[in-house]
Length: 188
Ligand SMILES: Cc1cc2nc3c(=O)[nH]c(=O)nc-3n(C[C@H](O)[C@H](O)[C@H](O)COP(=O)(O)O)c2cc1C
Image (cartoon, rainbow, N blue to C red):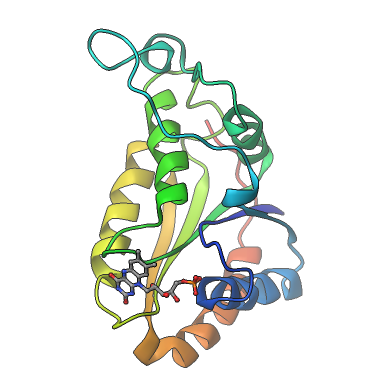
């Protein structure tokens, strides 16, 4: 099973990274092959809302006209059997770079061409609130909604907070093994 892990944190040693490490350890132990991408290392710009009605080629053709790293990353996502989204919680939401990527992904998924290999794809997400701990549920709820807009097969969205971080690391190790044990399933 090929897994693509998209990480929305800036800090390669922060809580999101450590939570991702625990998940990846479980995935790898379960036999999965994991590619991990720090989204900030890719050139992912925010949607510029083209067209008179705010929709451009995303609605009509299922592609984004911006020329940056988005299309290549979507291709990597299409090639994966499982998509993982790992974000820190900022203001009770996902991080800006995760938002930038998913905002554009759900737009291209409005079209049959765009949603090819995305709709129906098994997905798992984790949202790490490392400050006061608030906002993890709201962030998970928003993540759930956005992945739902992409018609992904959402297996779970796991909220974690500073107060339960040690427990969630253990849960993530188990979750990784569980995910790796699932039969690969392609997207639409
Ligand atoms: C702009 C911003 C907003 C944040 N908002 C929240 C929040 O709503 N709830 C929370 O518990 N922590 C919040 N934090 C703290 C981060 O969740 C925490 O620093 C987390 O560990 C960041 O992830 P990282 O360690 O992967 O970088 C915020 C941090 C920043 C920079």
